Image 1 (tube, rainbow, N blue to C red):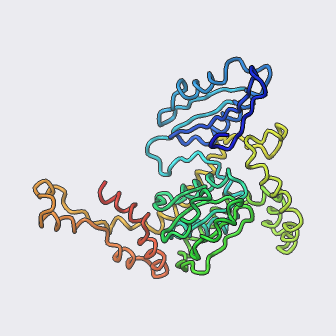
Image 2: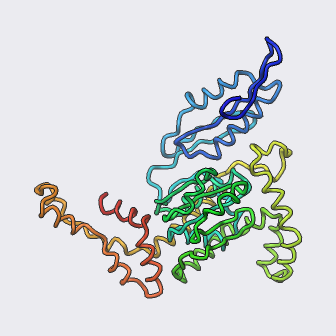
Image 3: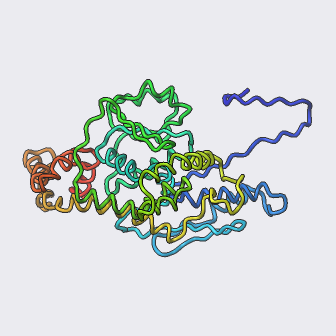
Length: 393
């Protein structure tokens, strides 16, 4: 019996043992969907009886050593394996939004627009957030998606998308965090969860606020309404589509059915379909479904990628709208004087004091209804990192 607890016994000499192979791609490149597709097709290839024309190690070496990473810009690298053509593409170096190759639909399948917005708002205010799900595979994906939606900010605190059981005591840490736990570990973790924590149940579309969760400042009304409307237009239907209720949702939007009738349909139909789909998310490649099954993860095409680009842009436009005048309050002294100053001297210290962001001046210059929100946003670590980069770049 080894450290893993797996026992192997040999009946007689000369017995041939078959040990499972595990392939895991570790990469600095953010090609989550492409790598998943490659592993899926490689598994199909390896388990077929007449398609494998070379050892599986040859395919691994081809991916790791021979397929070049595409340079930033318009070039793409296409890799064919079985009946799939996998696309690797690197965006231009300077884009208005960060390119993220993530399956955004997973988050919007789990949570409706109102809960996603509320959760995102909590993260911008650097609250403690804990994601819970019965499916291991969606915890990291949803965590990464939420972090990407903070752009141009960046989550600067404790970040453990899948927290192991032995690290559960850190959930009582006196710092903001974004962590995830599986439902199997939830009972163990529950005793350590701080009263300030916001628990997000991805399986049940719910947010639960702790008894001592700090109150959130009021949102900027008009700008928040625009963000809300944009998200509903871009991805509002996905939550209901995942529950097999896309047509009913469209009828409700067009006032063809009343709100009470729609809620009745939700109670009767929505839960069963979602539980069926949820149960497939952890199955490695959903190979138990037929090729035309709607549960299979389809390849992201250009149209779908444009949809998620628009989604990221909606959050970015919100930040642009509320922070549009911040550069007027960045004070940078004359850098030509720096060469003549000795680090640590009184003149150097005086010069450094002129290098700052006038936070109070910026907040006071805004509309009164925005001040409470901006005052707290400007006090966060992620905003401080955002300003620091612009002060010293």
